[in-house]
Length: 403
Ligand SMILES: *Cc1c(COP(=O)(O)O)cnc(C)c1O
Image (tube, rainbow, N blue to C red; front, side, top):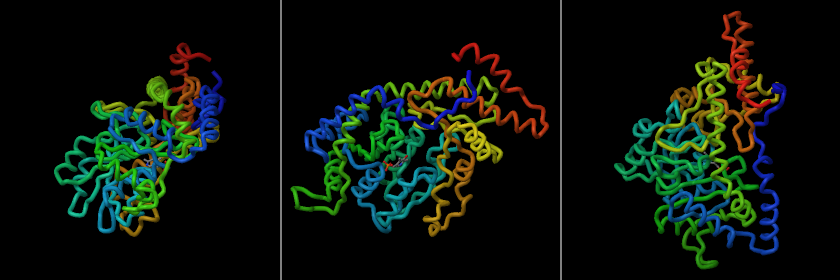
């Protein structure tokens, strides 16, 4: 086992290389077809993904951010409206709300899953709440049961931000089929990634789907007649061609991500770190698709651990270093950082570790061994009696792992 080897945070070449010839052929076919925007490749993708997401309608678009914008436009969100979103998410979730002149209202998260907290959503609902917009973060569905019940009780639409979570399930149902609209991203780092920007919407009602299709092309139908003011959010055929090829491996990649997550759990246990590090857990409510493997590093040591890993060429990322309620652009909304205590704590403790198709068990071993090394050296510096993580695990794990 070479502990000195670098481990990338993400290496897309490993999932693309077995498909490279087919992807290039599909791109060449689009090149020769002359149909570059929407068209047959995009329609094929929409059909495939509607079935995969267990919804009657899928509408391809130009990005996950535009999907969110279109969803809120279709629901008529505008000035004076409030949209409840988690504070602990990628910026686009709240950006779409603000772009339409509405106000994002930030909810706190469940500390175990990092997903939006249903009791906090209940606390924030009032007269001007127009939409509840939960995010399925890191590959795991939000706790949708109570959120959908709140939506029904108060007649508020529920839109899912499923950008990180294609194929995840909640109580046996795929994400994107739970709320009235689902928003997906095919940004290259997502579980199904394009080779550029692309996104998708799912809808259960034909009327909503029709509206989304219209808004995607400037509200235009027939050509040059505009019933609504929409935007240009069309998907290009090159991205659809890549996605149609890559889709065939999505289920096997998801299974692989799940195995990688299990391996991390096993390794953290072997190294005696499972009491030291907060490990992510899959809720029994559904199927986790592990877009990210996010640990919690307590006692203010997250940034030091990240530096330790970086210096040893082990990749990691921080999703997200600030809650949206702490962002400069939302200062006018008047939140104090600790108004959302779980978001505040998570932003200071989370660290995402490498998890992607093609990551090897040896590389995972290096990641966890380097983390163990950090705790071991820090403890010996503090002259505290340290459990001997490395020797204990080296004994147990080396017999089961290839070199
Ligand atoms: C990636 C992402 C988006 C935005 O998708 P883009 O395709 O990058 O515009 C929105 N929400 C969440 C939670 C995301 O992770």
